Image (cartoon, rainbow, N blue to C red; front, side, top):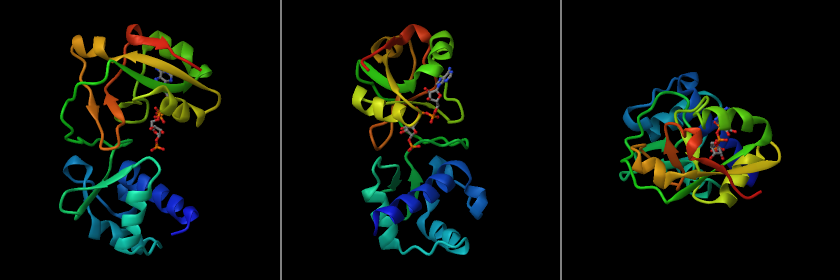
Length: 183
Ligand code: HQG
């Protein structure tokens, strides 16, 4: 599949598996999963004819591994990034000592005052390294890396989960656990 189509399909999947399933008549089930057959039928009804093999290509080739099949291959979901309420059923996991968050200067005063909040998503998204965080921040301008003292957060009872693609999730990061990292 052409790169342009991969991106176009990935955007449609993000929209309907994370944000607006009802727009194509889908309902996310437990854990955010939907039947692959239902998804393909719903997309087809809304003008996007996609073969299962093409969907496989989008899932495996996706630059950020945004989507995953379950073990049977009959269900699909977004690995994270939802802004509809979804319990991803990910077990709590012990994070690395430091996690990173990429943002931009205009958000810093609020972040340093009130910490990281999930904003329109379900969780705060954290990256395993500064390089990835800077890529995330770059979507909004000159990126800034914030380092999260995940070891201390974890020791004081904050829970972390990790998605199938290595993105770490937590409910919020209070400002005392944040420090500005490398630029
Ligand atoms: C900021 C993309 C003011 C936060 C990416 C961020 C990632 C605050 C923005 C994934 C704040 C929220 C997630 C506060 C946080 N005051 N601003 N208290 N707390 N912010 O997009 O982490 O392409 O919801 O710094 O690559 O940027 O969608 O989160 O700038 O992996 O797959 O509020 O989304 O992946 O923005 O990105 P987002 P994010 P996908």
